[in-house]
Image 1 (cartoon, rainbow, N blue to C red):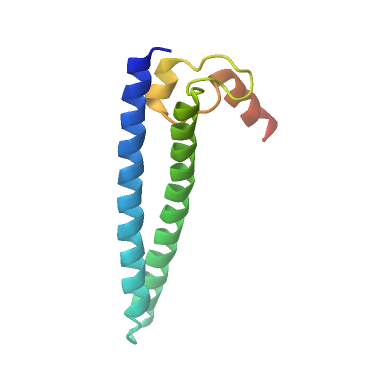
Image 2 (cartoon, rainbow, N blue to C red; image 1 turned 60 degrees about the vertical axis):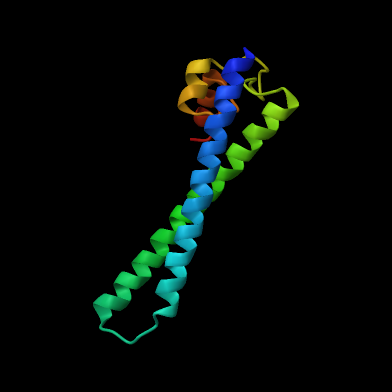
Length: 118
């Protein structure tokens, strides 16, 4: 894999990491507002606040997971192992990495994992 592509993907990963950190920070602030606004209201308002809180928690968990995967991909870049499948050790196609820059398995190994986990 050529260095220019790896440098491009490192920039993409860094940008995604920054976006997620900003999103998590905003969600945390929104969640605090919901919790702190403990004003008595009707049941619809209370239910709406609970739903908003649950949604923020779910989004936060998804973003946290993606952030971990991005950090792992950045570590693989530093180790010189970016773009290499962790299972079969073959090169992951650039097209896959452009779509999913933090991919750690080639399509074949990922498909096999998904079939096994059904």
